[in-house]
Image (cartoon, rainbow, N blue to C red; front, side):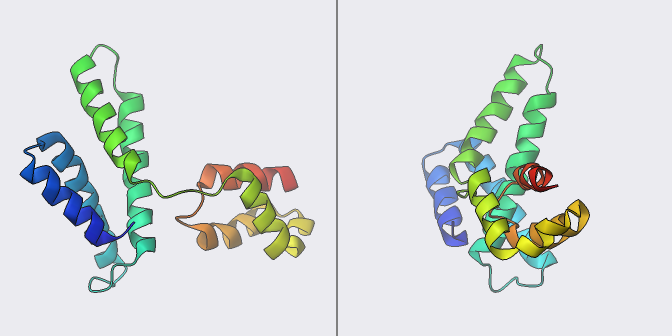
Length: 144
């Protein structure tokens, strides 16, 4: 996903007077900008930065939805809509099988050592934005 595509979608939602959609996409644009500033690449926003920001926002929206009480139906519906809109922009994540193949191909020596901490410390930065950390942890658990 490119930053320009996000901005174009936000403008389209504004023109369509779709305030809830515009707000959800606007939160993504803000998150991307913040992450780019934090990583000192404000003028060069890569797809990697955009994907990591989208994943982070999706997990935050999902947590909001999961912790919202059932008695607050209108709020829960708002959180669900936001989660659905952000979900449209989620990058394709690696499956557990793909993660397993990646570990065997690139880190067979680490996996043989069965040191979970060392494996996680090495692999998480490499797969950041391409795989869910929970899936990485589950696959590493199988090796250890």
